[in-house]
Amino acid sequence: MTWAATVLTLFPEMFPGPLGHSLLGKARLNELWSLDIRDIREHGIGRHRKVDDTPAGGGPGMVMRADVALAAIDAVERAARPLIYLSPRGLPLQQARVAALAAGPGAILLCGRFEGLDQRAIDARAIEEVSLGDFVLAGGEIAAMALIEAAVRLIPGVLGAAESPAEESFSHGLLEYPQFTRPQAVEGLSIPDVLNNGNHKEIFKWRQARAEDLTRTRRPDLWALYEKKKT
Ligand code: SAH
Image (cartoon, rainbow, N blue to C red):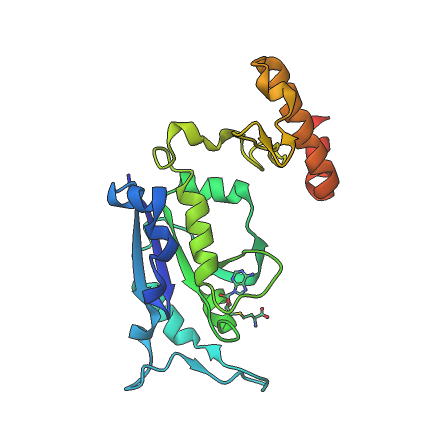
């Protein structure tokens, strides 16, 4: 079955953008996943297709109208797909959630603009909010692309067997070990000896130790979770 992404956006021309390139682009041509882009403005109000208005209670900027967003949402066939609003107030996206999404039928992604979406649209359809991280973007489109890219690359057949996601960062709760390739020496820096000796058990041990070092020093939050799981 084809993994189906539907994106609701005020900027449909931004898509497929990066999602049309490289392995993801090829996988889309091979129908391993599909991308359905919907223009929210088609549901705008009146001759000018108005999609936003000033914030109730005052303040700067504009707010996306709930009636417009709901009309755009309701025009999409859900088919058991999760409905997600990309939002800095959401739960920050993590690999476990990405893997769960990739294992499902797809996702419907609503991209905000301006000061964000009228709360009533979120409440009326119990929309899940997902954040790309603790920073503020100008719109949800790049966040939607990031979510789609992260999920689609986990769909079987999208990455070559050689690029299996099984060992990468977060897959076991650790950051990935450092990678090296030819040439043997760059500016006097050489590849660690252990990687040249062909002893797979030693290489595995070295990589595990480096992954643990990196995680402990860079991401104490991940390290604490990892330690808890081990015991
Ligand atoms: N006023 C809002 C930010 C609006 S930014 C606030 O302070 O919470 C405009 C749109 O960009 C949002 O509606 C959302 O769809 C998107 N966006 C901004 N930052 C994001 C983030 N970290 N993750 C996902 N989407 C984000």
